[in-house]
Amino acid sequence: MSRIVVFGAAGKSGSRVVAEAAARGHEVTAVARDLTRLGGLPDGVRAVAGDVTDPESVAALAKDADAVVLTVGGPEARLYTDAVATVVAAVRALGPAAPRILHMGGGASLLGEDGVRIYDAPGFPQEFKPYAIGQIQALDAYLALGDDVTWTYLSPPPVHFAPGDRTGRYRTGLDRPVIGDDGEARISYEDYAVALVDEIEKPEHLNRRFTVGY
Image 1 (tube, rainbow, N blue to C red):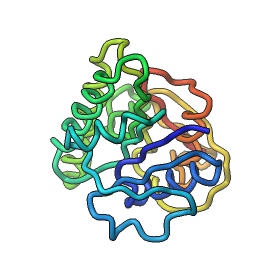
Image 2 (cartoon, one colour; image 1 turned 90 degrees about the horizontal axis):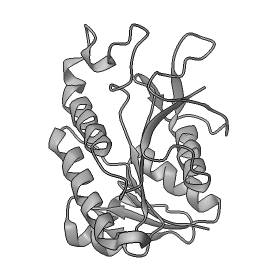
Image 3 (spheres, helix red, strand yellow; image 1 turned 180 degrees about the horizontal axis):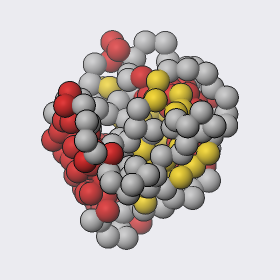
Image 4 (cartoon, rainbow, N blue to C red; image 1 turned 90 degrees about the vertical axis):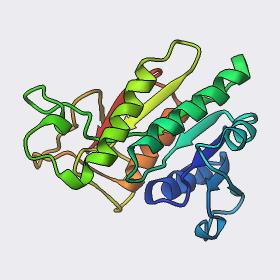
Protein backbone atom coordinates (compact mmCIF):
# COMPACT_ATOMS: atom_id res chain seq x y z
CA MET A 1 0.00 0.00 0.00
CA SER A 2 1.28 3.44 -0.94
CA ARG A 3 0.40 6.84 0.44
CA ILE A 4 -0.70 8.83 -2.59
CA VAL A 5 -1.48 12.55 -2.70
CA VAL A 6 -3.47 13.70 -5.74
CA PHE A 7 -3.52 17.40 -6.58
CA GLY A 8 -6.38 18.37 -8.88
CA ALA A 9 -8.51 15.57 -7.46
CA ALA A 10 -11.77 17.31 -8.40
CA GLY A 11 -10.97 17.19 -12.11
CA LYS A 12 -11.99 14.60 -14.69
CA SER A 13 -8.66 12.81 -14.63
CA GLY A 14 -7.75 13.45 -11.00
CA SER A 15 -11.03 12.06 -9.71
CA ARG A 16 -10.45 8.87 -11.66
CA VAL A 17 -6.91 8.52 -10.36
CA VAL A 18 -8.29 8.87 -6.82
CA ALA A 19 -10.94 6.23 -7.48
CA GLU A 20 -8.49 3.79 -9.09
CA ALA A 21 -5.89 4.13 -6.33
CA ALA A 22 -8.49 3.82 -3.57
CA ALA A 23 -10.01 0.73 -5.19
CA ARG A 24 -6.60 -0.94 -5.02
CA GLY A 25 -6.28 -0.27 -1.32
CA HIS A 26 -3.86 2.64 -1.37
CA GLU A 27 -4.05 5.42 1.21
CA VAL A 28 -5.24 8.37 -0.86
CA THR A 29 -5.40 12.07 -0.08
CA ALA A 30 -7.55 14.03 -2.55
CA VAL A 31 -6.51 17.67 -2.80
CA ALA A 32 -8.52 20.53 -4.30
CA ARG A 33 -8.62 24.26 -3.79
CA ASP A 34 -12.40 24.06 -3.30
CA LEU A 35 -13.49 21.17 -1.07
CA THR A 36 -17.09 21.46 -2.24
CA ARG A 37 -15.96 20.07 -5.59
CA LEU A 38 -14.76 16.85 -3.96
CA GLY A 39 -18.14 15.22 -3.67
CA GLY A 40 -18.65 11.47 -3.74
CA LEU A 41 -15.17 10.38 -2.77
CA PRO A 42 -14.55 6.66 -2.27
CA ASP A 43 -14.58 5.37 1.29
CA GLY A 44 -11.33 5.96 3.12
CA VAL A 45 -10.13 8.84 0.92
CA ARG A 46 -9.09 11.92 2.85
CA ALA A 47 -10.20 15.27 1.40
CA VAL A 48 -7.85 18.21 1.92
CA ALA A 49 -7.98 21.82 0.75
CA GLY A 50 -4.70 22.72 -0.89
CA ASP A 51 -3.00 24.56 -3.73
CA VAL A 52 -0.27 22.93 -5.80
CA THR A 53 1.46 26.30 -6.24
CA ASP A 54 1.55 27.11 -2.52
CA PRO A 55 4.85 26.00 -0.94
CA GLU A 56 3.44 25.49 2.57
CA SER A 57 0.48 23.49 1.32
CA VAL A 58 2.61 21.24 -0.86
CA ALA A 59 5.33 20.74 1.75
CA ALA A 60 2.80 19.66 4.39
CA LEU A 61 1.16 17.13 2.09
CA ALA A 62 4.34 15.76 0.52
CA LYS A 63 5.95 15.09 3.89
CA ASP A 64 4.12 11.83 4.54
CA ALA A 65 3.56 10.70 0.94
CA ASP A 66 5.10 7.98 -1.19
CA ALA A 67 3.84 9.53 -4.41
CA VAL A 68 2.57 13.00 -5.32
CA VAL A 69 0.36 13.10 -8.40
CA LEU A 70 -0.25 16.32 -10.34
CA THR A 71 -3.46 16.28 -12.39
CA VAL A 72 -3.92 20.04 -12.49
CA GLY A 73 -4.73 22.16 -15.50
CA GLY A 74 -5.96 25.50 -16.72
CA PRO A 75 -5.57 28.09 -19.48
CA GLU A 76 -2.66 29.87 -17.78
CA ALA A 77 0.57 28.34 -19.07
CA ARG A 78 2.45 29.44 -15.99
CA LEU A 79 0.30 27.22 -13.76
CA TYR A 80 2.11 24.12 -14.97
CA THR A 81 5.64 25.38 -14.43
CA ASP A 82 4.71 26.95 -11.10
CA ALA A 83 3.26 23.60 -10.00
CA VAL A 84 6.40 21.74 -11.02
CA ALA A 85 8.69 24.24 -9.29
CA THR A 86 6.67 24.13 -6.08
CA VAL A 87 6.45 20.35 -5.88
CA VAL A 88 10.09 19.84 -6.83
CA ALA A 89 11.21 22.28 -4.11
CA ALA A 90 9.11 20.44 -1.52
CA VAL A 91 10.45 17.06 -2.61
CA ARG A 92 14.06 18.22 -2.59
CA ALA A 93 13.70 19.55 0.93
CA LEU A 94 12.67 16.09 2.13
CA GLY A 95 15.87 14.43 0.92
CA PRO A 96 16.08 10.63 0.60
CA ALA A 97 12.63 10.13 2.11
CA ALA A 98 10.98 12.27 -0.57
CA PRO A 99 8.01 11.00 -2.56
CA ARG A 100 8.07 10.36 -6.28
CA ILE A 101 6.31 12.87 -8.55
CA LEU A 102 3.87 11.70 -11.22
CA HIS A 103 2.63 14.37 -13.61
CA MET A 104 -0.41 14.15 -15.86
CA GLY A 105 1.16 15.69 -18.93
CA GLY A 106 -0.06 16.83 -22.31
CA GLY A 107 -0.07 15.10 -25.67
CA ALA A 108 1.09 18.07 -27.74
CA SER A 109 4.75 17.41 -26.87
CA LEU A 110 4.58 13.97 -28.49
CA LEU A 111 6.12 13.50 -31.93
CA GLY A 112 4.13 12.84 -35.08
CA GLU A 113 5.10 10.33 -37.76
CA ASP A 114 7.35 12.95 -39.39
CA GLY A 115 9.23 13.49 -36.12
CA VAL A 116 7.75 16.96 -35.68
CA ARG A 117 6.30 17.80 -32.29
CA ILE A 118 2.50 17.84 -32.54
CA TYR A 119 2.39 21.34 -31.07
CA ASP A 120 4.59 22.59 -33.94
CA ALA A 121 2.63 20.88 -36.72
CA PRO A 122 0.50 23.05 -39.05
CA GLY A 123 -3.07 23.50 -37.90
CA PHE A 124 -2.58 23.01 -34.17
CA PRO A 125 -5.72 24.61 -32.62
CA GLN A 126 -5.06 28.10 -31.30
CA GLU A 127 -7.45 27.65 -28.36
CA PHE A 128 -5.38 24.78 -26.97
CA LYS A 129 -2.00 26.48 -27.22
CA PRO A 130 -1.90 27.96 -23.67
CA TYR A 131 -2.55 24.52 -22.17
CA ALA A 132 -0.12 22.83 -24.53
CA ILE A 133 2.79 25.22 -24.07
CA GLY A 134 2.35 25.06 -20.30
CA GLN A 135 2.63 21.28 -20.36
CA ILE A 136 5.59 21.41 -22.76
CA GLN A 137 7.40 23.79 -20.42
CA ALA A 138 6.57 21.49 -17.50
CA LEU A 139 8.16 18.54 -19.31
CA ASP A 140 11.22 20.64 -20.11
CA ALA A 141 11.48 21.56 -16.42
CA TYR A 142 11.47 17.90 -15.40
CA LEU A 143 14.03 16.97 -18.05
CA ALA A 144 16.36 19.66 -16.70
CA LEU A 145 16.34 18.18 -13.19
CA GLY A 146 19.15 16.17 -11.70
CA ASP A 147 18.88 12.71 -10.21
CA ASP A 148 17.95 14.05 -6.77
CA VAL A 149 14.26 14.13 -7.76
CA THR A 150 12.33 11.11 -9.04
CA TRP A 151 9.55 11.92 -11.48
CA THR A 152 7.42 10.47 -14.26
CA TYR A 153 5.48 12.45 -16.86
CA LEU A 154 2.58 10.56 -18.44
CA SER A 155 1.22 11.98 -21.71
CA PRO A 156 -2.26 11.02 -22.87
CA PRO A 157 -3.01 10.79 -26.60
CA PRO A 158 -2.95 14.23 -28.22
CA VAL A 159 -6.61 14.25 -29.32
CA HIS A 160 -8.75 11.29 -28.25
CA PHE A 161 -8.70 11.48 -24.46
CA ALA A 162 -12.11 11.52 -22.80
CA PRO A 163 -14.25 9.83 -20.14
CA GLY A 164 -15.19 6.28 -21.06
CA ASP A 165 -14.91 2.70 -19.91
CA ARG A 166 -12.34 1.11 -17.65
CA THR A 167 -11.03 -1.89 -19.56
CA GLY A 168 -7.81 -2.28 -17.59
CA ARG A 169 -5.82 -2.65 -20.79
CA TYR A 170 -3.48 -0.28 -22.58
CA ARG A 171 -0.17 -0.19 -24.41
CA THR A 172 2.74 2.11 -23.66
CA GLY A 173 5.09 4.18 -25.78
CA LEU A 174 7.70 6.83 -25.14
CA ASP A 175 7.74 9.94 -27.33
CA ARG A 176 5.26 8.99 -30.06
CA PRO A 177 1.51 8.38 -29.67
CA VAL A 178 0.38 4.78 -29.31
CA ILE A 179 -1.68 4.11 -32.44
CA GLY A 180 -4.54 1.62 -32.35
CA ASP A 181 -6.02 -0.61 -35.04
CA ASP A 182 -8.27 2.24 -36.16
CA GLY A 183 -5.27 4.43 -36.95
CA GLU A 184 -5.91 6.74 -33.99
CA ALA A 185 -4.27 7.23 -30.62
CA ARG A 186 -6.91 7.09 -27.92
CA ILE A 187 -7.55 6.15 -24.30
CA SER A 188 -10.25 6.78 -21.71
CA TYR A 189 -9.65 8.76 -18.52
CA GLU A 190 -10.40 5.54 -16.67
CA ASP A 191 -7.65 3.52 -18.37
CA TYR A 192 -5.25 6.44 -18.15
CA ALA A 193 -5.78 6.25 -14.38
CA VAL A 194 -5.10 2.51 -14.49
CA ALA A 195 -1.78 3.16 -16.25
CA LEU A 196 -0.77 5.87 -13.81
CA VAL A 197 -1.50 3.77 -10.73
CA ASP A 198 0.26 0.80 -12.35
CA GLU A 199 3.30 3.05 -12.72
CA ILE A 200 3.14 3.93 -9.02
CA GLU A 201 2.95 0.27 -8.06
CA LYS A 202 5.56 -1.02 -10.53
CA PRO A 203 7.82 1.84 -11.67
CA GLU A 204 9.08 1.43 -15.22
CA HIS A 205 9.57 5.03 -16.36
CA LEU A 206 11.72 6.74 -13.78
CA ASN A 207 12.83 10.26 -14.70
CA ARG A 208 11.31 10.16 -18.15
CA ARG A 209 8.09 10.67 -20.08
CA PHE A 210 5.88 7.92 -21.46
CA THR A 211 2.48 7.73 -23.09
CA VAL A 212 -0.39 5.26 -23.31
CA GLY A 213 -3.05 4.18 -25.77
CA TYR A 214 -5.06 1.17 -26.86
